[in-house]
Image 1: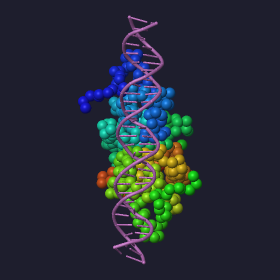
Image 2 (image 1 turned 180 degrees about the horizontal axis):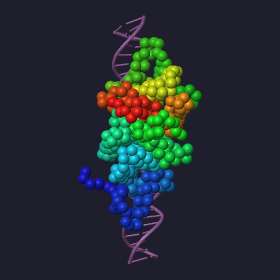
Image 3 (image 1 turned 120 degrees about the horizontal axis):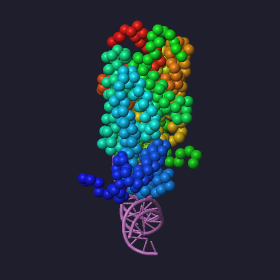
Image 4 (image 1 turned 30 degrees about the horizontal axis):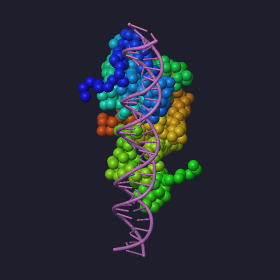
Length: 227
Length: 227
DNA sequence: CCATCAATCTACTAATGAGTAGATAAATGA
DNA sequence: TCATTTATCTACTCATTAGTAGATTGATGG
């Protein structure tokens, strides 16, 4: 095996995520993006197995071999879709981790921004959840790891808040899963064009997360209803 | 096309869910159940598209035509799996709706029992979520309806609690989705044989649901940590 | 034992769709 | 205008697998 024998047809341009610096690379990148975008749309609506590469190509006004100029296989295309979404989530997480603030502030920020990130990649997120089993073990591991990281970081944050007295939590582990549920399930109910936009939805979920750690609504402690 | 032309091979026994009254029907039912059970296991691990009927048959020590004696098609088998899980959830919901009690009590019961129901059908629930697109439109509609019912009933319940002053909720709709998230996401993290059993997990989630409607932990209002 | 009927198996078909080889068109440059 | 290279298409192959026809086994009753 070693390195690849027959490249996506024949192409010596940069790999998927390398920054393009020549004109040709830019064009290639654009084409790749459009393929991915069409595939996301179709895989989302019809499922991975239920979509043929001929359909994807047709949606682009092209034919199948066009796709093979950019991807090794149908599976490679799926992996690209999933890993883009994951990369995005990963970036978001890294960015948020470097921030300062109280556990409450951090929790709010994480839930808000992660929800928006998930909703921005709604279709890809749903595709990933569905087609996880289709992915090669390596890709699966990477992604599973990210999810574990997320849960774990939330747990650490919750411990912190409990230690500082900001949070009151009976079962930190389940509370963390609960918060992850809010974010992870959001694509199931959120519809763009609905009552709430993404930021608003994220804000509401952040409030629910606060409730879960028993840190919100200090006024309620006095028995005074608000709203 | 009117009624079916070629029945599952040739068989005049009862349909899937009819109560069996003859010996033969009982045996048929048992065989059906074992096919479904093997299929759930394999579809869960490998996905629907990634599993051949030959594999399912092999898992039973049988061969493919055996399956066709009980199911019209691979798709029919998938529909049976999903609709069993849904029927179960439906029964649970109906049972719970007939109960009496305060909004708080009702909410607790619904979250507890629904979580257990979902966890009992964990594999099937995950299969359904994944393979929704593979199902015929009719089956999809039925199931979507059940999910909407669930959300809606939770919403009604929350309104009730707000009216009675038991709950303090800023956005009832999102609160309902949040509670549905807790239940719907449970299969993603719950592992049998882990720290918690199903009942315990359900209980913890019920507590989180209470927190979301701001009805739990009255002791915390005095600033006294418990546990 | 034999006849009958159902249950199950062996061995096919037919269709689908991923992936590719080689032809063709289009761009680039002299 | 032609030569060369790159991008895309046409038209295949090949593997897989849902679904089936017909043979075979095994049970049941005479």
